[in-house]
Length: 133
Image 1 (cartoon, helix red, strand yellow):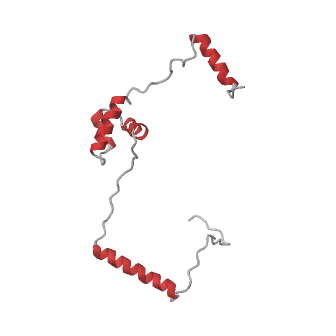
Image 2 (cartoon, helix red, strand yellow):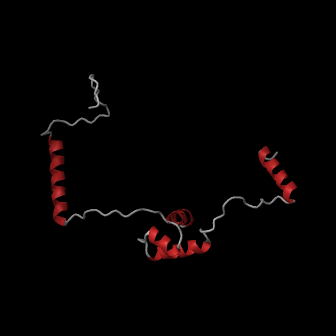
Image 3 (tube, one colour):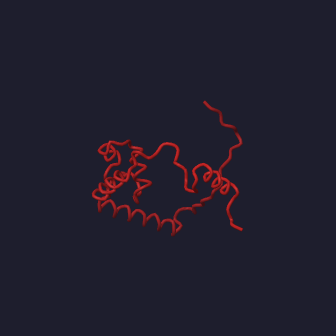
């Protein structure tokens, strides 16, 4: 016996009775009108030329919505979306200071000049109830 569910067999028979063949029926619902192959190709070329290109700017140039462009990039192109975040760059002097401080801190932990640090996952519970003020 074939390992096909009864619902699949019933659906195929119904399709055959309606259309005269076992091919899929015409699709219902909203079709992808904006996410055409041309849009995917053009977007892929633009992103490959400049990897830091903004999705919003690309969408504006292509005259499609921001959400449509995000769907194209996320689903149709082999690209991972992420937002660049600016942060402070450390100078060589600052890096040396931080390294020296971390080494001193590590020495103090290993020499036991400070009491032992105990880390637990327990929570301190108080007996008195806290009220909103």
